[in-house]
Image (cartoon, rainbow, N blue to C red; front, side, top):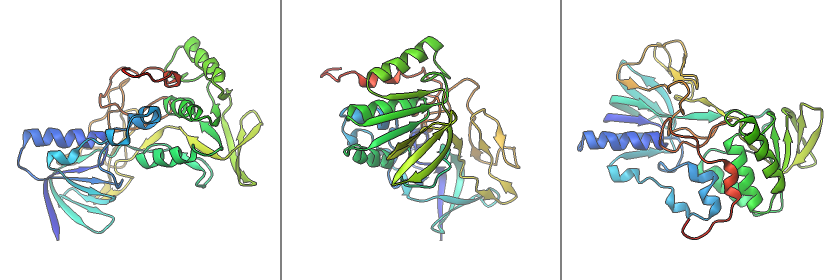
Length: 316
């Protein structure tokens, strides 16, 4: 049985929600379908690394996509797209016919060279829930990467009184976006807050030893941790390298270039690459030197992450 949608969105993030609302405003009566891999409806991602750790309620993150009368098809992954037949197939075997198709899948995190559940690739609401539970215990945490996600999570874990080590290959925090003096100041600030800062050291390898994860660095040193949080950036996932009839689905790389065999735009499929020097868009989450999308593509950089350390006062 085919499910017909004049408008079908693949992706369950902030971009997908914004697109669904815009479509509903332009076409008040047409059915809209949204296929998302997560079991949750679209939510705001920036609070996962800052506001929720400062006491904001979890129910504040939900975007209320269902209020736009969108059919939410959650916990599903698209496995095939046939542009000629205008159909999408998901991993349950369900087939959807579309009039217009939007790919808003965001990206997938780069992986570390060790398969273990002691590594968290911090990106989703479920990742937040898991890390928040682990932070209740007296564990040693290692943050791999010195971008926004790494620095915000390090600050969040220190606010919980946890032992935190940051492994940062650059000479300072946020070195890809901040001036050298500000980047260096942040390193000193984090050290003053109790974070062990290992700057200028890259990741050379990982191994299990005695129930711990041993982190080997490019300076031939090593240290251990109970939990690793990876902030290594991501790769585009539109949608997951799946194939359509006649070639690979084109996907946008961070540079704005297309990869895959077919570089022409698929009929009635729209995906807009970011402008050079601009943020990738509101639907994508943290990366090395990047942060959760704030719904404003190309908006100003967020305040430095160390502000998370400052006490929260009523009315602020």
